[in-house]
Image (cartoon, rainbow, N blue to C red):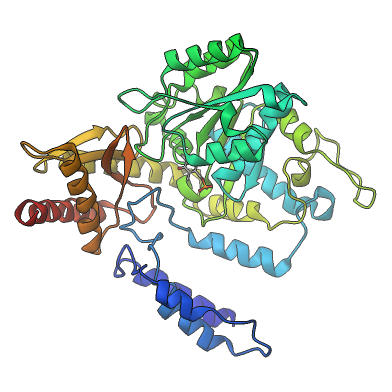
Length: 459
Ligand SMILES: *Cc1c(COP(=O)(O)O)cnc(C)c1O
């Protein structure tokens, strides 16, 4: 069975650059026809693999495609799948340290590597989560416990109007209702406005509320904007508030020396969301959280039960279940550990630097295309733009920009998507897959140019 599966997977990877970057996802009929009751008897593997690989897998955004420049690209490093195979086959229990001490140590090592790469201090502790959303949720729980205790309703959380929607959702899950979340206006570069942040904090204090946390962005999903992290940290220090940075998209750019100025202040945060399934190219289901004061992470999640083995000494050994909400779980640390051991940190740094260089090349060439206006410069590896022409109204520009993304994607070689920011439809390009290289940027520029030509002649 393993041979049959591996053969299909390897063939699939080998075919990725020939497959459309966006599969046919107009599949409502297909999905209706797929509904079925649980089978009473088992069936052989081959026909199941057949349908998966020929009918169902292709009907999707080809997220691992080299031409996937939409949303925030992932990739999916193949050895991580092998790590999962080992973890699932050996099925050891990595929720508590005592049950698999050496394996849990590997996970602790991987978290320490993230900590060191992000410039966090030795007392910081981390947690592998299923994604960035869960990491931010956990961070808000830590901030709430530290600053509000039982007085949850008084607490106010601040983020920007460009923040990822998971911030509002995480706040709500953590007991901070939407009427206690302030979306601070962003400036013309889509960064949180400090003056507005300070004014909002002061206004809430005046009416007796308790400002307790700011969630800033190290790279927004819309346009890649990096909030003034250092200055926000100063505000939080002065106001005795928790500063969480959502680095789900951008944190791994801190690996690149050239990006440290843009991300200045990142290592000072109280906590940081990072998504190895984005900036480390791992398969989906790999998020991470770092908390500067490891004791705060532990305090928020510590729990014991009479039937569990005695907990290790907190300073000595890392215990996943004492630092996060889960008890039984998979073994996410092995994917990260195996990938870093196999390729080395230098390979990840080089890949991040390459994505940055490709982005600058794409930006320069796309800005030169007829009618393109750059609205958001690439601070990391994402930029945004719109299409215009003399006499165009905003509504016409919006429609044309949307059509530009669709027509470019329809050509099959790259997939790009848009967003709406500050009331305008923007096209966007995000370069983050380890499979994306110069050839895909060349294809992107050619296909955008052809799509612009098409829109200009046919409307
Ligand atoms: C992707 C993303 C998230 C959400 O992370 P998930 O891993 O999808 O849960 C949050 N913030 C930003 C900026 C993102 O790009």
